[in-house]
Amino acid sequence: MKHRSDERMVNEKLLEELFGGDPDILRSKRTMLETVSRVFFERFNSSIRHDRIHLISTPNRVELLGKHTDYQGGETLVLAGPKNFFALAAPATDGVSQLVNADPELGETALRMGVDAPEILAEGVGARYTVQVARRLTRNLVDAGFAPPGNVKAVFLSDIPIGGGTSGSSAKVITDFLVFITTSGLSASADFTKLITENGRRAGLHLNQRGLDDFLLSLSMYIAHYENGLDFGNLKGDRGVGTFGGSEDHTAILLGRRGRFLLCRYCPTELLHEVPEPEKHRVVTAYSGKRAEKTQNAMEKYNRLSKDAAEAVHVLNGALGTGYGLLRDFFLEMPPSERAEAVGKTLRTAGAGRGLSGRACQFFRERELIERAVGFLRESRMEEYGRLMNQSHELSREHLKNIAPEVDRLQRLAIELGALGATGFGGGFGGSCYALVDEADTRPFIREWRAAYLRIFPQYRDQASFDAYPACRGAYWGPLPR
Figure 1 (cartoon, rainbow, N blue to C red):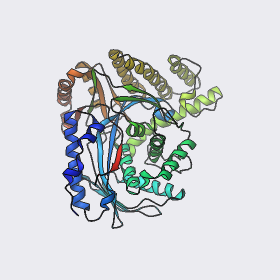
Figure 2: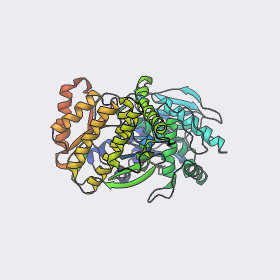
Figure 3: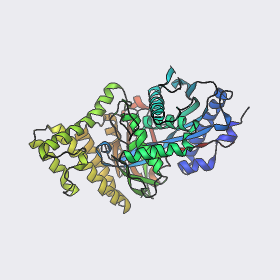
Figure 4: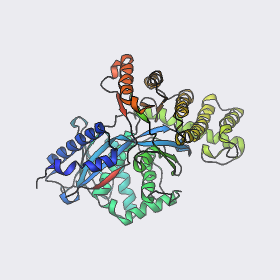
């Protein structure tokens, strides 16, 4: 059976539903889809179930505010971005799973699925995420009395910068997860939906949140546990992929709304507010070219911030005679503006060093900034919002010490070029910066920001990227029309 992939793949209406109307973004998405389709049918036309082909789109995220707050039960302000993974996937007919990157330099991962841990046959770039998804999904399904996921053929492609700090690794985990559940029929299974939702309830989620699908909400928290290795209700965890993060990335990616910023709280996940995207201003994101790596050394630096926060909780409990599990639980009787000073004083009195005290203070100050920022966004007071962006950047540089020189220079250049505000974001130690600019100045600003940065860091000319970032829709998956 032969297919004309160009006719089947490029659904202009769907692209606009996912990404909006920016012609440059739509042109790029169209090209990506055509590439994925061509490679998929060239590779797997004779080894797939053609009646069960699924299309998947998984966006990246921008953390507008909320640096290292989610895993201590704090809030973050996020959007789903216009960079994404596209994937085509179908059940395999030859008993072997192959997940192929359409970029031939990045290779493919091959597995043989079964009731036990998957047999690894080949490992491409990102294979550890694929293996972790296949391993945990299989074990959780079998333990719950379900059949294991079947073997799949999939081709995927991403324009998310590797190590860019916009959650490309979480998007890859979610893409792999969706590849397995769509081709196995689980995405359309009421029993699977109930399994995830009921375990979400056991994990502490408040279901029936206004305007939210309980399954999507539960899924965002469940897949986050594929990375941090935690149990999700009765669905047992393991070592994860080595990062001790929270659910921020997965929430933005799965629940993202076009034209909306999401204010969320975590541990467990709650959607607190949807804030309309500013009408006359635009988010512009610059990837520095300096990768926020997930090597062992880099993960140790990232996880240090998580461990320091947990240690602050331990010291505070000892000093106050409490038994709280999260930083957010302390000093609730005080106004938000007073909590940072109170936590710092308590930790210093208890003998904690400046680093531990600063880490806890940053958590409370960042939360205070977010509360004020949402009010400014609602009132269209964009200059005040921009100043809070700058303050968030300074707090991260001073207390988290995770702002790479390249990202710091991007932030300062953005201000010099007239941005209302700018800040690095994400895990840090590399990655990206976003700026808020007048809509009419978006394209000139991007050109000037890029040119100014590359004059200082010409070594990143082939890696750095500068883009407008409208708030886009979250992950999509569905059958390919026949």
